[in-house]
Image (cartoon, rainbow, N blue to C red):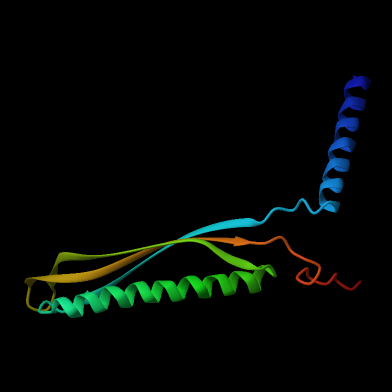
Length: 136
């Protein structure tokens, strides 16, 4: 029993030593985050092709702006440099039926939908970005 306890204590000391050594050598890896966003914009039933193309471009532009803003927020929150690693945008046009609750008519409503898959990388904190130690 004493041998097992001594072996466990020795293993813990070795692991703690390895972790401390890795931290000294700058072995802290960047953090990768993934996020998915979706938005839909209702279109008028008589919208022209140009109006539809404009709505789809507007939806993709809004999601692109959102991606940049997310990186800025994450950078500020975690005090790390944020970099967009991958950004996938998609847009499509959907035709759906919606019930008109006022006069019980069914009408077709088209929706411009856009999706975004975002992968960002938060770098390891540097001396400049590490939070200051708490005063005692």
